Image 1 (cartoon, helix red, strand yellow):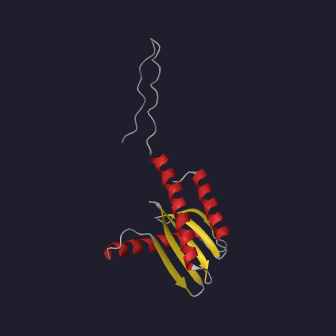
Image 2: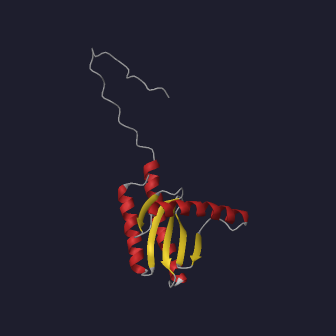
Image 3: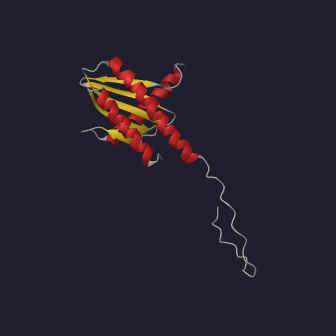
Length: 157
């Protein structure tokens, strides 16, 4: 799980992205398995979009593998009323953008790729810190003489 401070940084990045690109109607960062990390998606159910993004990501990864196109980088879907774009965000997250039909697609890609890189760096660094083993604790001071040496009960493993 990504710590709260990094989630706030990811949300800040999403909001800055929406401010830079006025025709974006929503931005969402999620884990590759479909869990919402942060979102700025007024009027859209973020959890559903994150789950659908994970499904589309799975198909996209299989397509790039099957066709020898390398690892997943991005996906663009155009509907009758706009675009949905998904960008790799580091090794364990994806950025999904919702855009109006009038958006400049080149600008969408430029800004989406930049934000995907920033969000990926934030999430990967946070996960690395969380997964890094804790430093060894200091040894306990010696017991005073005369204190029974009782072992703590152990949980079965």
